[in-house]
Length: 114
Image 1 (cartoon, rainbow, N blue to C red):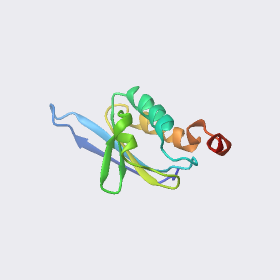
Image 2 (spheres, rainbow, N blue to C red):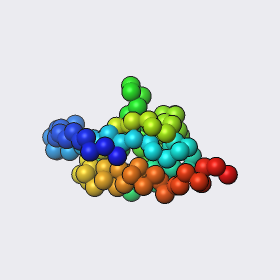
Image 3 (cartoon, rainbow, N blue to C red):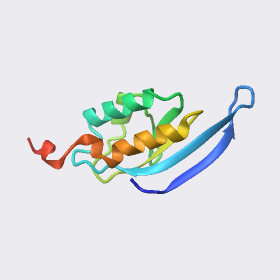
């Protein structure tokens, strides 16, 4: 995962609450890319957090809590994505999701050759 991180605070539409938005660039490094199993792990992790989680690939955005939307990104190995989290636990959510990318979603390259 790249250490590049952009952070900002925005006013939420409801009641002027301060909602933090943090983002980080990640790189898909597992050999088969963001296929069904890692997309499932990612969506499950994202659903643990209150924050809105989105992944961006060029101009395409996907809800990080939706396996189907994540699969539409067609993120192959080497793809750079931006993960954005907005909400009360945005930083923690971003760290947890970033960890999935760093650990290749617990896949080894040899897992892909069967």
